[in-house]
Amino acid sequence: MLLSRPFPKKHETLPSYLLRITEANGYKNIMQLLTTERIQFSNNRLPSKKIFFGEFDLERIASLANVESSELHSLKLLPYSSNHCSINGRIYSNKSLNFANVRICPECYREIKQFQFINVLMPKTYCTRHLLPLVSIHPTSGKLLTWGTHYLWREIRHSDGNHFHFDITDAEYKTNVLIENAEHHTLDIAAHQIDLPGLCDLLSFFSRFQQLAFKNRLPNIPHSHVNYCRQYYLPTSYYLENWPNSYFDLLAYFEKNPLGHAGITGVRKCFRDLYDDIYTPENRHSSGYQLLRSSFENYLN
Image (cartoon, rainbow, N blue to C red; front, side, top):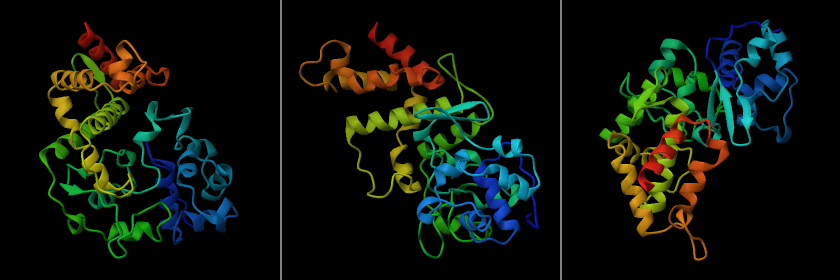
């Protein structure tokens, strides 16, 4: 049994809880905690995604931490489909989540002593409460922070977000405000109630098709890197601020510059990938895609 056994917190993710156990018991990272307690992984590497989904011996960890295994199971992400998962009753697209790297506001961590799920979202790059960029890079090595970073909890505790200061644009700030607001309240866009997963779907949709249309120059770094996401999601606030005209402008662009190739006729000739994306059955539950479908049909009419 572990010497120090913190209890899980409400709405905490499994990696966050494991990291608090790691800190409380002096392990250097989650991998050392699990292997010391005879939980093995292939290639001796920490599989971050499996940590989120609890694909290891949770019962043993529950026994060592002296908590009910049901409490740990409640912290993990649940597979919903091949490309979606759920947590706290909300269904997220896997592509909206950053499983590999850690982003955190040092001030938030000092206050609540846990890693917030909202910072796992790919478009989340800034803390509007403390006016700090999310820390995602080791202050000494310059490497991306991961769930396997040695003494991550210590590095975060002593980090200063201003060390990684960058000039945030008005558009990036507005996007982060929307994300933080949607964590607790639905957003009203054109009489549609958009929840946090739906907002993430909208942000991903517009980033993708903005890039397809206009080929914005993006940094040659991993797509999970916060600086890549800052550029990739930059145009998204414009689309939501100027709804639906901004969306209609994008659709008009693809009418003049079709996504389909020769041999495709009808609506899919102009909007092939976009059409397939908004009408795929996998996205039928998304409040964001419901808005996209409704407005797309209004545009056609």
